[in-house]
Image (cartoon, rainbow, N blue to C red; front, side, top):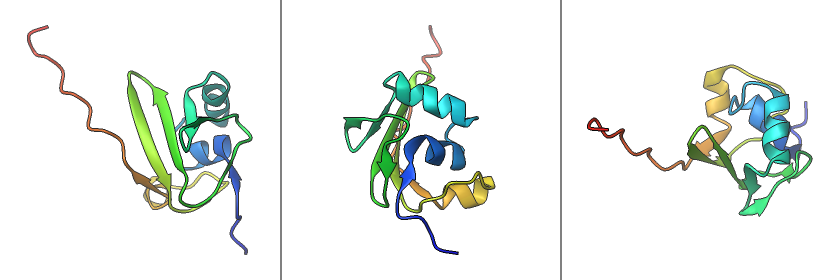
Length: 97
């Protein structure tokens, strides 16, 4: 089986378990919460190995570098091999607030 050379960003986000469903990934792209290489991404934006994907949501930003292209959802261990996580460490909650 030949590996794809490009994959839609919404499919990839769902496949690597960054979003619960492909619909959520599609909606995140459509509402401007996803950027690819610092450019706003539509759901059909094509990814290639080495691209950086930024996903905003839930009060934090996740930044992934595409290490492998997949189109189908896989187990968490395999999904983790498909990206390099460059996300900033979230600030700890202030216990006094």
